[in-house]
Image (cartoon, rainbow, N blue to C red; front, side, top):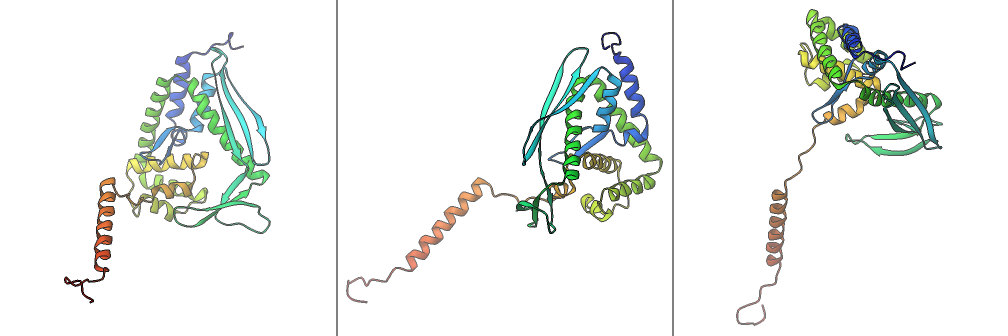
Length: 275
């Protein structure tokens, strides 16, 4: 069937650009994970649209290992025309992290986060495991499937997505901001937490902040990160002393110790007599 109906990349490009001009699609087409300078790119929703537009791509997933601790699933994306295949093995731990536990929960381990609060790893229920598995499979499909789409088409689509988002935000910034806050509330993140992340009262949001929030929301919704991880990464780290400063402190400490030791020696008269 793939040989009888080969894809036309011009048609693929036209379909994807048409999707990217729709504000509703553009809002969910990119993700941002605030690690370092930020990791961003095509979202799961965009990858799904790209795979549909390309056609003749087979997506498969199979469990290759399973025990009481973890499950490993192999996800592959195959181009049926060129026979190029990309696959990845995704390990899914059968636990979930919670800030607390209830009676009946089986706690596997615990740790302290950067804020000094306890976090507990609890054996996942079937629903928790299914949600976790679906999220991991979707990410693997995105990472493998997007590699079968020509890079120049993906880049052009991402540029169109940014233009569409800017145009949509400029039409009614206040309404866009309210919808953005409502979206975060919908996934359990209060407006106050969002403002804490921004670092101001959010009376006015710049285009960059608005797009950053939208892309962060997509990353949270797709399971690329969690709000706890976002806020922990947002917290400034205490600067570590440089090597030079460390050596200086060590030398100063040794000199201080020598002076204290000298002061503690008994005084001996010059004539050698008893003191």
